[in-house]
Image (tube, rainbow, N blue to C red; front, top):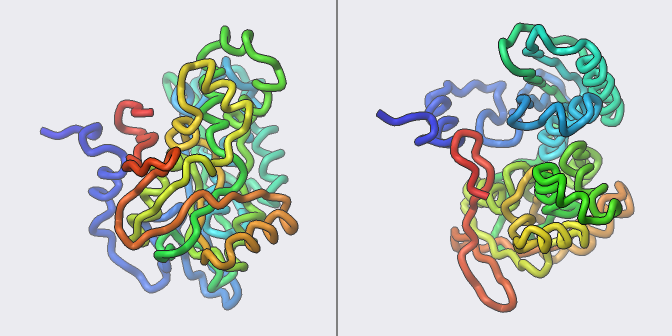
Length: 340
């Protein structure tokens, strides 16, 4: 008899959702960063997502402040809205809490939630509280709005498009390595550790960037949560294309490279497979990609880098020092053993 681990996260999703009935008011259901729903507005569509943060799986109370935990819980949901080109508007929180948890911890978490919601212009409007015998779980449902006709999706990439990513990649994975090894933190300079720990504890969703890209020619997008290679595989599968990634072009912080060297890992491994960067991986017509990067930076302050090309052949290829090899689309899977 097969188990949940045998199916894996995405196999389980496919099994549970394969026979969902279509509806005319469901513009986009399962299979993207968020659902897109028609609520009768001539101007906007509703974008809906949910994401749970589980103690000892996504965060540890001894590794982050309560405020940081609250901020992260809201930000990872806002990132799904960002990937669709939507603006977060309303959040509901289901809170599963052990009765022994100190009230001050929840006070701090809600302070972080409120601060992060304010960053994106989002209101916390309700939720639910239930008892959990062992651990704290924060489960957020986020509703956003996007202009009708300007929603980013995974399936729009075309052969010949440029492949781009905002910000930098690998920093959150390097930050996790620091959290796992306090002795490593002690060996490295504070200016090396600080941005990496922040990337892991308090990622910032690229909401303004997603909205701008949706209006200015991006053809497909998703956020980098499971790992750049894994998320690229999702984008390519949805679009029926492949991709070539230039490893030398990956935007990697010097601090990330320093951690990679200290733990005897390739910095490109952290960038390609580490995940949790919550940057936007997107595609655009190659002829306009450079101008798109310039406009994005000028308008939103968000840098973007061309890291490869979309291909007609449905395969992932990495180019490293001129050598072309298969890029395995692996990354985080909640239901299987970590393979990073």
